Image (tube, rainbow, N blue to C red; front, side, top):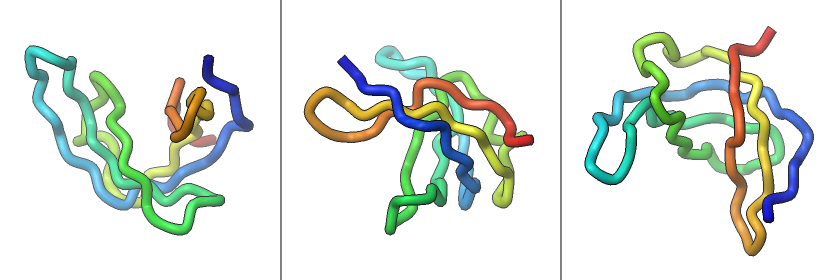
Amino acid sequence: AQQALPAQTATVLQARARPPTERGPGGAELLLRLPGFDAPQSVLLEQADAAVLPPGTRLQLALARGRLSGHYVTGWRPAP
């Protein structure tokens, strides 16, 4: 089971489209600056449009910690 974490505001550093494949729906592959992480984080937002997420865009992310390790984005929206 995942453990929900407080929402975070991330800043898009880079966005590129990832086409759908037989294994996934594709979407926007983002490089994000997230508070609390030293290095930029790579995230795939399924079925999102990279064209509307240029560098500098701020996103509100719902995050969860994985059962064993890692962090997962469980939801997102443009930051207010």
